[in-house]
Image 1 (tube, helix red, strand yellow):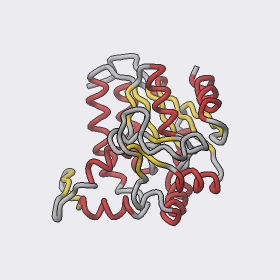
Image 2 (cartoon, helix red, strand yellow; image 1 turned 90 degrees about the vertical axis):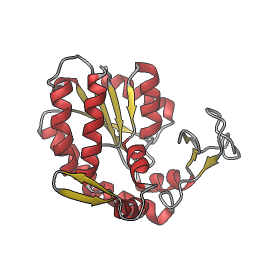
Image 3 (spheres, helix red, strand yellow; image 1 turned 135 degrees about the vertical axis):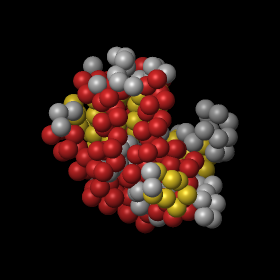
Image 4 (cartoon, rainbow, N blue to C red; image 1 turned 180 degrees about the horizontal axis):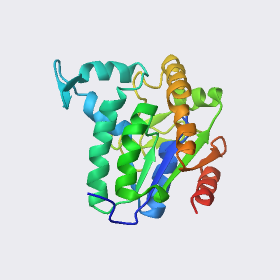
Length: 234
């Protein structure tokens, strides 16, 4: 199926804790886009994996327990496997006429080279916009080590003086929890290295391929970042 609509794609990239999920949620609500959270797809696929369970792609099998171990250790899952899951969902959403906001995906150059052609086929390069959040490593570690999400819908809850004593998510009423292992300080450091070495090279690739890319400072309050994102995509 070739491109048949004028829907759009916004891709938000950035280090752990840059606020990609919060901004994607805000944009989805304001613009009526589908919020595509690749982390949730990966988590759903690997967290309940059973011994010996595999994903077959072509003639190759990927062990989902091995992928779970990578995910828990802060290492990015196998790019071609992630791209397979993502591409299948992109095609479904395109057929439904949905515009999409991606938060933190694609994550590696091999994954990018698999996903972007599918995006272009269904949406057109002119309808794809890339936002890159910039955040210092020390801010990323602080944000992630204090981050909590809700147990039901996995909403991220901004950590500050007003929310530090919250125990229940104000959005859906479920318990607030920390993501086991993934937001431990040492794992965050690994995730930052993964971002630096495996995700950042995507930015230059996308620029060289002619995609619209805008850098935005992610250190201000979410409301200020949101204003800057809106300006960038207009």
